[in-house]
Image 1: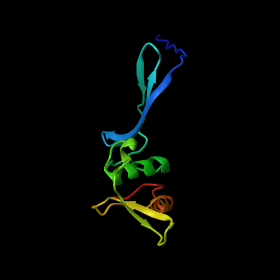
Image 2 (image 1 turned 90 degrees about the horizontal axis):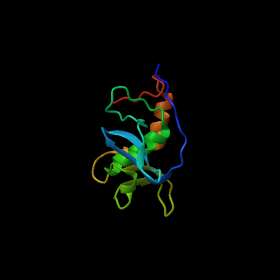
Image 3 (image 1 turned 45 degrees about the vertical axis):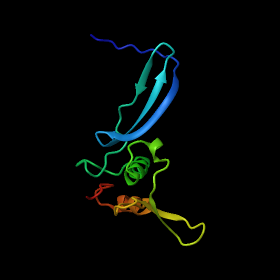
Amino acid sequence: MNILTYEIVNAVIEEVSLSNDDHGVLSARLHLNYGDRRQGFEGYSLYLPKSFHHHTLLSPAGHFIFRCLQVAEVTEWSKLKGKTIRVRRKAGWNGSIQAIGHIVKDDWFDPQKDFEEARSSPENGQEKN
């Protein structure tokens, strides 16, 4: 019989990454330093985009993060800084933002619309391609 044992150790989070560059799925990673060695903590898909046949919109946070990355055409959250996007907002100096869009493609992310569609979907959040 194989008995697994666990230990509890202290670690410092040296860096974090949030990306969609590993097979096109949203993932997060913590880069840990134990003092004598380093290790990454990761491994869960936080969001599967529409291109995956078993995609469902069950994670508003994952969908929001993934779509922001997708609209700006970057694979990591930290790479959003400096990217140019289009913004659809109410007219006026301080109008509220309805959606963000790719700078040249017709790809818009309207969170309210996406989440309302998911809530009203008969497939309980299944997005249609």
